[in-house]
Length: 340
Image (cartoon, rainbow, N blue to C red; front, top):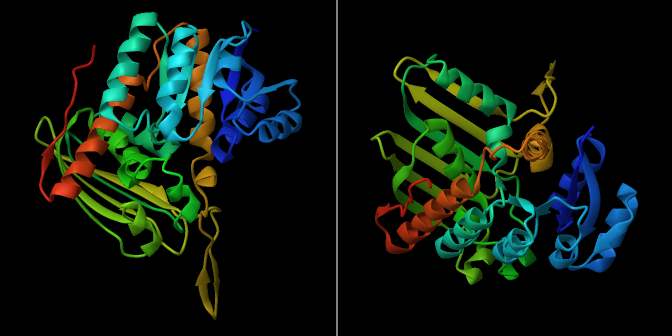
């Protein structure tokens, strides 16, 4: 069996999960090496995954001839610089979301990767979550007629550590979190978001105000063909990791998402109870595996990626428009680009 030689850059929580999937759950992949600015962390992860090579830079991964593709899971601020190294080394790239933190850098990376022929897949995992995949298939089959309203909500169980915000490398709320909904909306509705009006506030995580960020947002959106969307994003549900989507069509409606981790409800005289999903790696476990498997198989088959640099760039543009809308208190047009 042909195998794709892969290196993983950044082995924190998310990067370690990708590395584990590549090492143990995707037989078409061969995990060659991991790299992290924290060399000790890279060494520990390499030992846990029983691989020989670990480094502290993307350049070290890019220099290896046995590495065909590099998975970039650094903080978002460093995505662009890492992808430049990968592209110039003619390596194919999987980059976690958001693609970049600015539209200008997204355009630069899109142009560079196209110029050198490096394929990019962006880690918008919602597209690979089985309920969303089935919803997309049902819409394309015409089961709900023409989709006319997209509604989505995402509630984290609790805010991240203050240090996550203090570092300044992960992007603002719309870039780091709501970008999932922006990409999902584009994909589900098969259309571009053309205008957005974002409302934001600091309601449950006062520490975030010192970093000029927010913890709660409601957004209204227009798509280019006239359909509408609404998104809620919230940092502190207090009960679990809650992600749901509703697509209203001219002939019906599809609702996806769930709260339970196990399909079990206990009912007694004292009442009923059930568990809830408490972490994104649990909620989207299938999606993370499916998207990485698809990336590996796509590159081996020499096909274009399904969630490419253009998709990443468009989601970044929507996040930028949302940020501007919130700051200026008005609806803002999205600076979209036509697909090359």
